[in-house]
Image (cartoon, protein in one colour):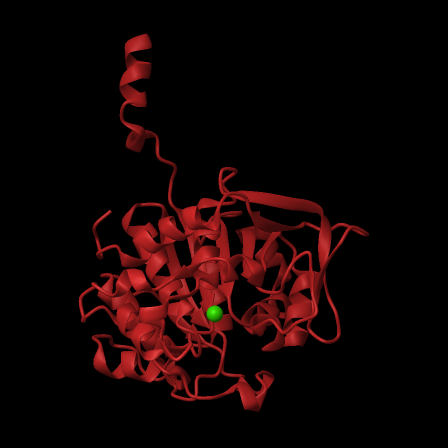
Length: 322
Ligand SMILES: [Ca+2]
Ligand SMILES: [Ca+2]
């Protein structure tokens, strides 16, 4: 018995947990960290840590290519058939925010994929409903790194389904313990953010903007193959007088993917619980201790460079090579 114990301990892969099941909800229409986050998700899938159930986009992409860009990335990583859905209701995004993306159309047009335009794909809500219905109870983690519009639609459509199937919602959004500044994912659709914050029926883990602002990734892709669409996304996205490949970018969405898949690992995160997130009328967020809900938010525990290195390694990992 003792010998068996030691032999198993010597091969930790044998003891590895089942992959977590994730639906990835991304704006993929502005910042390139959405592309980087999808890359990290695939790298974690290559390591057997996650199964990607679906990718849905939550922002009207003027180039009609948010899902096409996602499909180009999925195809690069050898998963060309991941179901895709798009948000057809662009009206919820302020028109002044609807500038063309620096990279989605180019990824859609110039890299291998078979996605039609966003307007020809199923609605994200239908993809959510179908995907969740097919999964075991309490098994799905939703990773939200954009507007909360699709999730508001889902709450309105079938709260019982969420309660049955979703284990946790991980949200990149807001700032904690409080912020009155503009945070993109809340401001993209404040009404949706309020609905999801107040009515979502499972635990929510929040990652505020202050987390990603402390960690830059992107330069790890400089030596990646030119055929890598994620490298191209970073190259095309301007940042601080250069591009995001040369400068790197705050790694907001990438960190949320890591958090969603691996959970708030105690060596990396301090978890603040026993409270609730409040969204004010200006789109600011605040952590409140009155009337606690099933909310928590995370704070980086060690030097941010440690998580930066872990995420950078995943971002630059070759497809299929753990
Ligand atoms: Ca495809
Ligand atoms: Ca995003």
